[in-house]
Image 1 (cartoon, one colour):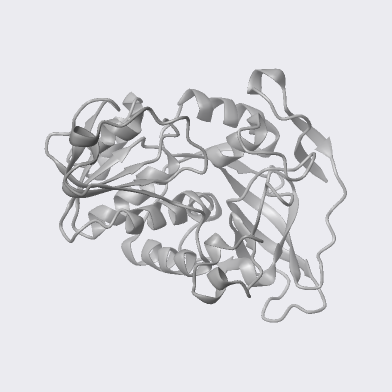
Image 2 (cartoon, helix red, strand yellow; image 1 turned 180 degrees about the vertical axis):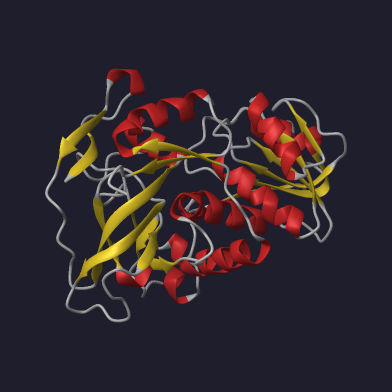
Length: 335
C-alpha cells in the first residue's frame, strides 16, 4: 500500500516525510483493519514529523483523525463486520487496570499508546485500531467532515470542559485552527459569548461567520474580561497574555501536546485573584462519545480543505504557514 513515513524527524523543508510503499498491516486478535477514506491533518502530526515529540516508532506513518471502513478484523473482535464505517482517534490503547484507568482518567494512563506516534496511522491506504478504541460515527456526517472531529473536535471539547466555563460565560480562544473552530461551535451552542484571538485574518473572518462576538490579533486584549480561555496555539508567550485577559477566578486551559517555553509570569497581574492554569492531556473514550453525540445534536460542521493523500507534505506545510482556516483533510484518490 502507499503510505507516508517519517524517515528522520526535522524541519519540513528538509523533507522528513516520505511517500513510500508499506505492506498492508495485519490486524491483531483484538484489532480492526481499516481501509482509510479520509484523514484529518492535525498540528500534532506536525510535531511528530518535525521532532517536537520524541520518536516512539521509527518510520512511523502519522495521522490520527481517520475515517474508514472495516476491511478485516482479528479473531477476538465482536460487534464489527466488514464494511462498517469507523473512526480512529489519537488514543489507541490503555492498560485498563492502573489507578487512572480505574477512576475514569484513562487519558493519564502511563501505558497509553497513540495512533500515528506509537503505531502507524492514517496517512496511508490502510491502518489498524484496537476494536475497543474504534468509534462509531454519526450517519449524518460525511467522511471529510467527520475526520477533524476525531481529534480536533474531541480535544477542543475536553479543553472546553477543563476551562470550567460558567453557564453563559465569556470564553477566549487563542488560535483558531481545526480544534478551536469546533470548540467555538460547542460553546456557542451552549450559550457562551466567544472572543477569538488569532494571527490569521482568514481565521478571524471564519470566527465572525460562525457567530463569535469578536476576533482580534493574538496579542490584543479582548473587548471584555474573560471567565475562561483556551490556548490552542503552541506558543508559550501567549500564556501571560491570556492570563491578563482573565477576570478574577478565571481559568486558562492549555490544549496542545507541545508548547514553546512559557516566559516568567508576573504574579500580581497574571496569577493573583485565584486565576488558574490547567493543561489538557489527550482524551478519554467517554469524551469522544459525548462529543460525537453533541456534534450530531448541534449540527457541528468542520470547515475543511481536502488534499489528495499523495499531497500530505504540502498539507502540513500549509498548516504550519497558516494558509487555511479550519482543517485540512487527506482524501484517498481511490474514493
